Image 1: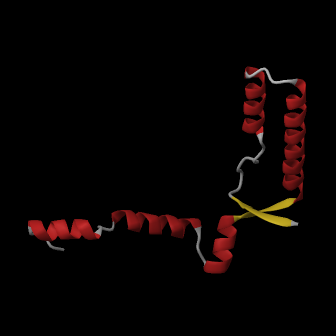
Image 2: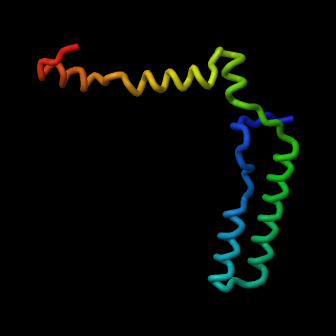
Image 3: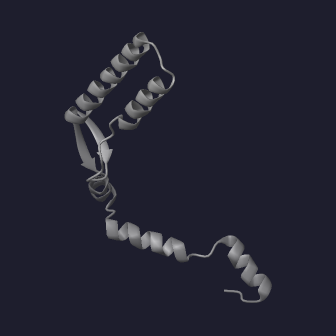
Length: 103
């Protein structure tokens, strides 16, 4: 069974947009019947492959992997992001030194 990494409650990746755009393009350019058949066959195979992949794949939550391998939790990651947001960049530090507000 193939393992697919996803964040829980994410939507499945089905070719809905491709199907709609293909239909509209074929209709807009008034293509012959054989082009409809070729496009329909390709889309049918693509839909079947996507559905098989959805049924045979096992989803794994990314946070569970990070927690088990590296001890990273959601709260810990958010704290690190908050710390990074408040860090001054090198350019900001140099600007402060030029103004006389050295840290």
